[in-house]
Amino acid sequence: MVKMATGQKKAKVGEAKLYARFSEVLGLYVNLTMRGDKVSSVSLSEGPPAAPFLKDHIYLTRIIDHIATGKDTLLDIPLDHCGTPFEKGVLEQLRKIPPGEVATYGEIAKRMGKAKASRAVGSACAKNPFTILVPCHRVVPSSGGVGNYTSAGGVEAKVRLLEREGAISKAKARGKK
Image (cartoon, rainbow, N blue to C red; front, side, top):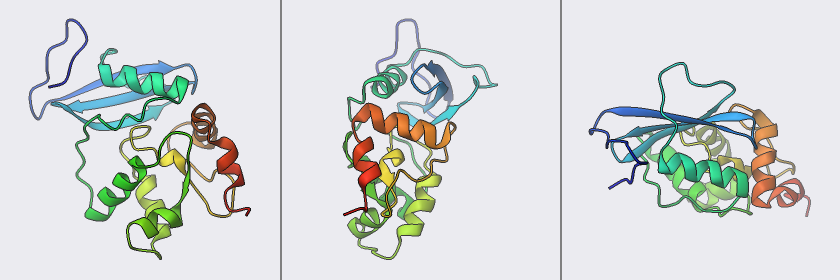
């Protein structure tokens, strides 16, 4: 059972609730959608959501704290994902990359037993509905640098996340062996 902040009621199964808070570190809003006890999406946006939203949820607080400190793996937060089996596999592999570490698209593909699927891994990362919780920001190109980031804030947000987690030097050096 999900612990809610004081005064909140547990959402009914199937009913989505939107939560949002501003992250000073990213300069962006972090938007969390819950369906029952599971997270159905996490996204970043430049402004607050247009739909009515709540500010307090234990998972949102943990995500905001992770952004600020780079600590907490967030692995115990349950996800409600309905992508393809390949996309689910990519997301599972991404969750295995600990804070402070990075992996290349090719390494993720190899871990899945599909060594030639690095572009497909990149596509799955771009569709990631769980920004921060499923750390696609920890995936970098084998040629070095940090690569792209499709969430609001783009590459600048990715760099800030990697800096907070202590992985920015690893990301920049990746592939320059």
